[in-house]
Picture 1 (tube, rainbow, N blue to C red):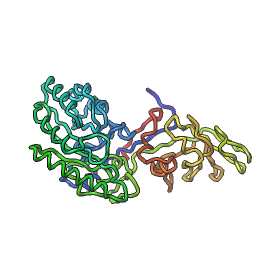
Picture 2: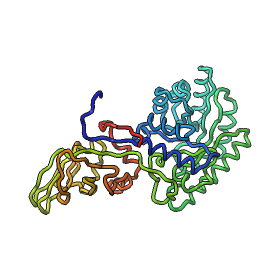
Picture 3: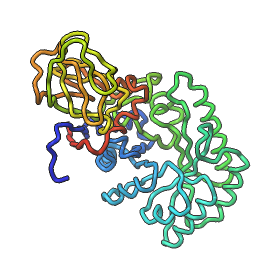
Picture 4: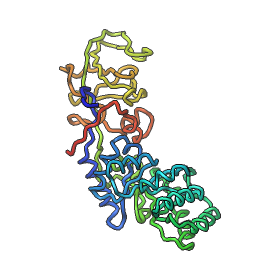
Length: 375
């Protein structure tokens, strides 16, 4: 799109992302590397822009979920190590090797495919072995399975065991018992790997473990949601100074006063109980502004909260501005971010929408233009 006229804009503050990355690096110390997790288009913030910012401010590598996300970074000219956190299919091996991505392996079928692709391209490929210590998702789980894998892996000549990692299932919970049990299991499996003659880089800590479990920081940590300015839950310590990176703003496009007893929007879920000044905003669930916010959420106008009235539509929503004087068409509306002394963050929106803060920035569609600033 060569032009943008829409009043609805997502602003990404790269200065905040830079400060967040520096704060995370400072918290884990110089002995521990930090991988910036930029999967899912950097949690909706823009993978290339966030990756560049993170690398300039202390990250030593990047992490994505699927090969295509790594290819996007390579095509943007980013040469830093890129780890694919999810496993791949054998037929994806050639693409992974061609773009010098570091894949996750947890089966010999994939390891052999990667070895063959690397040999065909006359390359040596570093890989990361995933251990399932309690997530129940991907990864080698049993000791016997691990021993067989290591025995077979030794026979490969074009791939090397660069990293070994696991992922915590509930390190963001108040009770860290299961996370610590996972860590105990991880260290026991790593001991078997070392006895087999390997000396890989180790990483286990996600954002919650970065905040709460310093003993799990090891050689590297993986910074995800904290890079974008949010803690993973209310159960973790908030000692690392981080700031939300994304804001969402729009403008009032229409105003009317409805009498008492009139319904608003689809399904007639809201009825005015007094003469009500209603402002229409050109944002809806087609933009990823969740329909669950209907009759629950609020926006900021003139620094004050305006509650959402009725169902959020695909392209528009209505808010009550009866108690906010002098609202006019063209006035700025903040749906995510700060206005005046008040703010609405992803955690609050997530509570209204009965989900987690991670999902809020990820929900906003490409229809909303992104603007990058360095405040």
